[in-house]
Image 1 (cartoon, rainbow, N blue to C red):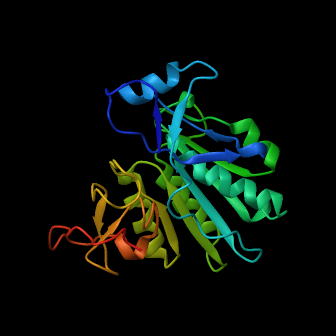
Image 2 (cartoon, rainbow, N blue to C red; image 1 turned 135 degrees about the horizontal axis):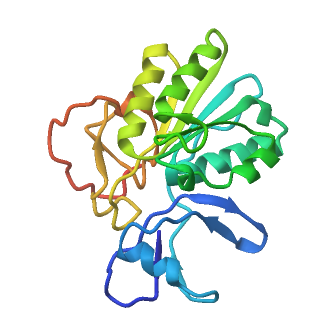
Length: 237
């Protein structure tokens, strides 16, 4: 959770996924201006002070030497999957990871050279056909699922929620484990404000900031809302 020294407007911090963590306590994030808060962060000068609360939440499962991970990223949903691929590369397991990366146009696809330098196999899609295959990222995922049919694979996704639900349904239909990093509006980041509640099977509601953002898709996919969330006595475990 990041908030610049911009006074009371906007009031709340913005949630970001970590892109990379470096020596000496440094970290990189990938930001896209979509509103006032991100615009102010983009205009911040080197040395400007920011308030940071983190790291928070859950992560994707560890890379496994005997399993191929299909990493499905949409636009600025790339960071946690980029980090996942970097971990695999550090462990000399990057050959077991594939990045399926989509955006509206070529400008939405970033860090391609860095991922190629990792040795990561890239499958790129754009809606306008400017880069890679023309179409949605789910089309490329479907092709890779078919390519790896009968072998141990997992799907991991981060991006717009509509994309994630489509990714999760594809994986479910193929009987493949799937983990998705969900986007929700959040104010506190620690499970107190309940602004990021989502219905789940394991309990009536789970919270994207403290129980997630990474969920087993089987727990949250196609769950009907049954009741309003109840404020917990303490931060949800």
